Amino acid sequence: MKFRYKKIAPGILRPVIPIELFYEGKHVRYEALIDSGADIALMPAELGDILGLHVRSGTKGVVGGITGGGLPYYRHPVAIRIGGWAHNVEVGFMPDMPPFGYGVLGQRGFFDLWKVLFDGRAGEVEIRPYLR
Image 1: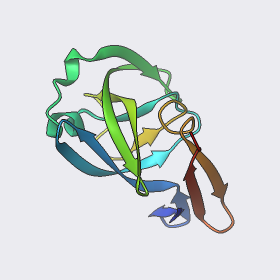
Image 2: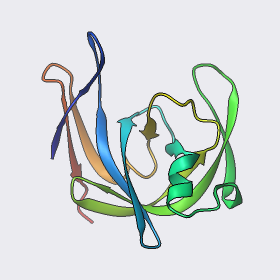
Image 3: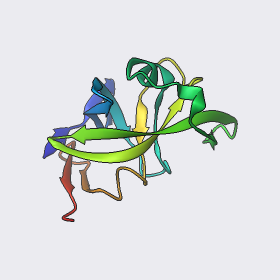
Image 4: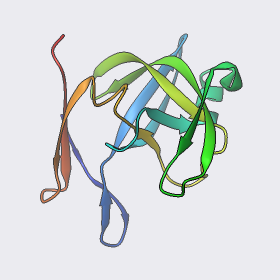
């Protein structure tokens, strides 16, 4: 399935795609940035709240990025659906995620389950699940 890059600002396009998260009969739709530099999927804690998770009861981790600071996240098992394909994955939910921007899809729980082809010239990304 192919997704067009999303225009963030004039001249700035990013591979942001629609996803759905599921947990115990609840689901939420969201847009996430495909980020090959991220180790795991990280989403705002508010999404975990919508799914009925007790976010801070998950396995704690700390993420640091380009700013170098460490922010906590809490991993929980959820299902993620992208383009009609669903997988059970662990997602980190961050209480202190910046209010503007996107959650990210990273190496574990995304790149290890889907084959991803970026086409910057065409402004699109193609995603296909790996055959099991």
